[in-house]
Length: 257
Image 1: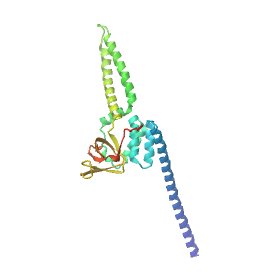
Image 2: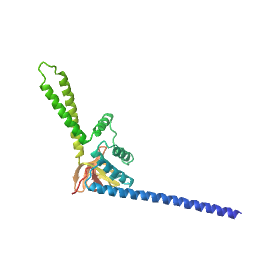
Image 3: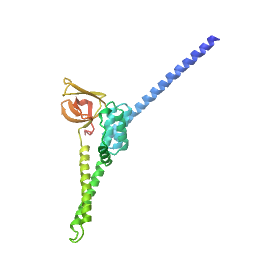
Image 4: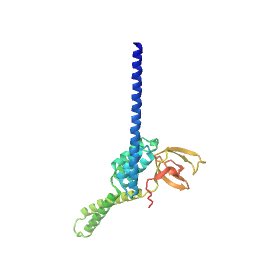
């Protein structure tokens, strides 16, 4: 009797072990399939990009594909490229914030003050094209207001047209300034992202110099100077150092015809 009970226990244990192994195998297979799907998706999206398409949605999808493959550097790179085209792209902005908040170097990003954060939201709300149209319309209305003031009779009250001219002039100058900053940001060729898993920063262009810091894939940096295979970069917290040039990629795409 005892022998039969022991046999049943052994059979149940074996079945349990086999079921657990099957569950692990299924999970690994599903993960492998998903990884393969994302790899195929990024391959197809890259073919579209190489055909000359510049689209924020395309770049955002590429960023998602790379993130699900575990490539944080490329994910951040393409989220930034999406925001470079459309700074108010909600999905790309949320995805970028999510990746940064989960990164190993999240402490290097300074929290903006209330006023600077408010200005940044307003600045990002308008795309480069939208700002250009707004500035053009404001210029036309301002010129019409000047024309109205110039042809107003000498005996007529000029307080109203002067008030409108001051308001429109202020809004025009503010919009024109934002347009200039937006244009400079769009053509900025110094913003880059670390694409290697781990990169060391040195006090000079070479490993023989003193090591200053270690940073990781996905960190957003600015290139100040290039010396052969090395780049002098600025970190989000204001720190600076030399890192190997092959470990970074610029946000502004370089298209080779």
